[in-house]
Length: 162
Image 1 (cartoon, one colour):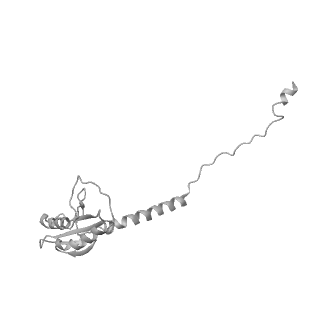
Image 2 (cartoon, one colour):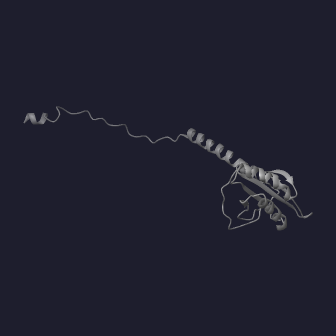
Image 3 (cartoon, helix red, strand yellow):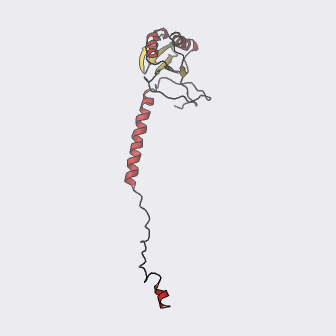
């Protein structure tokens, strides 16, 4: 009998116990690093959209508008701001944020050049809500006459409060 008692392994094993677990500490430094990287990323992405806005253009409201893929100016897109002066009943055209001309028939050479560089070329029109349709029609006619088939209008989905 004495052999059977000692036959289980020859003696007691030393029990190894892990020390009790401590609560993990929250490391704030890596979190700040990640947040700063995200901040820089979003600032660099949004800077192109901020540069494309014009405070003089008050966009019309279209509640049922659809979001289109945003392209930066120069990437197959021409940004046309159409300003309207209610006092003189006249308009002005800005191309990619630079004052260009007052008459739409002067757009032809620019449209032809851009269309030759990019066949899927798009014209993004940001027209003030006060612009008369007759004036806007001349811009659309100039685009169509020069072979541009993709014209998109920029609108807002709710009235902006100032």
